[in-house]
Image (tube, rainbow, N blue to C red; front, side):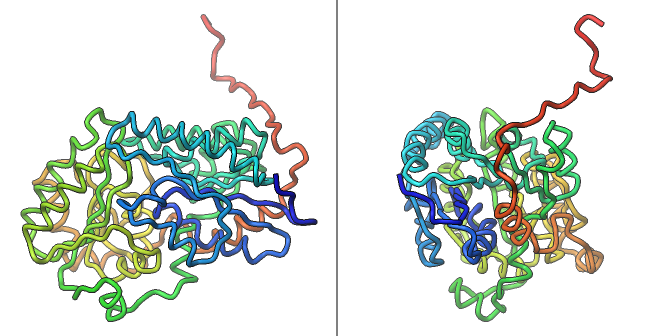
Length: 397
């Protein structure tokens, strides 16, 4: 087992996919820049998959110190495959966290793979810090995973004030809970976004008008995770305009979604599919398209920073806080088309001018790095019990 550098606190960070890495980029930058921190990154899951773009290459280009590359993602399209992926990751992470044992392990959000590092850290008595707890997405198993990670964690960084209060209401001591904002929004303030010409060169396409960005993921709370996909693809098939697709998450049903996306794109010349986009490219795209559509949290969390109309379809993001740019539509082709027409109405876009994003203003990374570097670790593993509320009656009362 390697020994910590003298007088430096070891912070381990787990990233599993392109999505969470775009959120972690600026916290990683802040941590790497501190003289009192020794940073180590643990890379697993879709990052190492050719199907999802081998996005570990982006982490390597950015120069962050990778302590372990963990192959665990099964080439599967089932919930059994997801469960086995967690098991494989646990075995590998136990060895990796023994070889390089951090003082704090930083996890983010709600992907099922994150259960693996959380379980290992608890067994090894490694304090856990968690980003984006206290949010709600009732249409995905992510909701239960997020809440489980919250209860396993010892330090919390929430994206909104409502989320902060929700984490405290779950029994977490207030001193442990910090309202930081969503770290993905730090790109808006700190990254140099591409103008339209540079973006077209990066994407190797010419952006037309109107252009629609589509992001659709399996609805993992449903037995048939693609039950809502028929309506979504039917609505897009009827829409005339440029379509840009990003790949779905590696959940049960994602392979079928990829096939459907490719089939739709093959039927029209103005459709393009992107397996992986860097954070800067993706953010730049949000600033150039006319609307976003799908069931991704990005349409709610990040699109709001551009006052970009976003049609949120179906139940996946049910319960999540949202700003005025979000238009909700049930998984019904006619309803989706109606919402899309409203989103592309110039009057609606005009009405969003000056809107605020409830997920923050782009300063999350600074807060996260400062707290991780300074939080006392002496008794951090010992949580104080939450008093039983008076309104909770005794059994039989």
